[in-house]
Amino acid sequence: MISSNSGVAAKLGKAIGAALVDTVEAYGEISFTVERKKLATVLEKLRDKHEYQQLVEIAGVDYPDRPERFEVCYHLLSLTRNHRIRVKVSTDEDTPVPSVTHIWEVAGWLEREVFDMYGVLFDGNTDLRRILTDYGFQGHPFRKDFPLTGYVEMRYSEEAKRVVYEPVKLAQDFRSFDFMSPWEGADYILPGDEKVEGQAPPPTPKTTDKKSDTGAGDKANKEAAKPSDDEELDVEKPAPKRTKSGTQKKGEGK
Image (cartoon, rainbow, N blue to C red; front, top):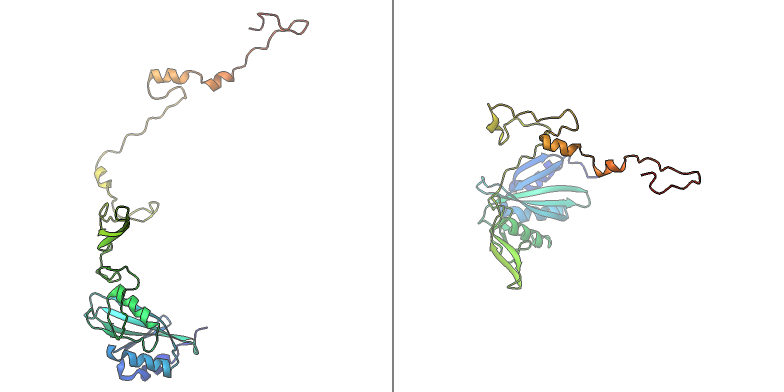
C-alpha cells in the first residue's frame, strides 16, 4: 500500500528551500516545480536525505503557447517509504537542462528519449543521441507542431536492395469522420440531407397482392405462372394397373 501524502508536501517543500517554484497536490500525487539550474542539487538531496532512491522515469510535455514550452518531469520512488513524487523543470528549444546521469546512471537513456521525442537538450550528458527514431530522422515526433504524417516515409526497395526514404505521399487528404452511432441520431443535418429539403417524399415502392402478379408486366406474369422443376416432381403420377398375376401388361399404366 502506498504511504499517505499527509505532511509530505510541506516537509519536502521546506527541504527544497529557495529552489522551489511551485507545489501542486492533486489526484493523490505531489508535484514540485523547481528552478532549472538547481535541479541536480534538489534531486540529489531528495535521494540522499529523504530516501527517494529510485528514478523511475523522465517524461516530457509540450506546451507550445508558453515561453518555455517544455516541461521535463522526474518521477521518483522511495523504496523504504513506498512513496512517489514528481519534480518538474521548464525549458525551451535552446536552453539545456542539467543532466542527472551522475546521480542515476539510468538517466542517460531516459534523457536520450526526451531529447529524441522533444528536442530538449541536457547539459552534461556525454551520449546525447537519438534512441527511438532512426538515423537521420528529421524533427521531434512528440512536439505539438510536428506533422502527423512526418516528413519522409521509409520502405524496402527491391531495386536498391535496402531501405530507402522518400517524401510522404498520401493517397487522399485527411478526412473528418463522425463516429457517432447512427441509432442515436444527429442534432445536425448530415451531408446529403440538405438536397431533399423542401422536396416531395420519394414514391411508395410498388407492392403486389398475389404471387402471380410480379409487377413487371404480362410477359413476366406468364413466366412466373409456369411450374418449376421442383413443382413438376411433386405431381403425383397414377398407380400402374396390375393383372391377376400381379404383373403389368404392356402398354398399360401409361
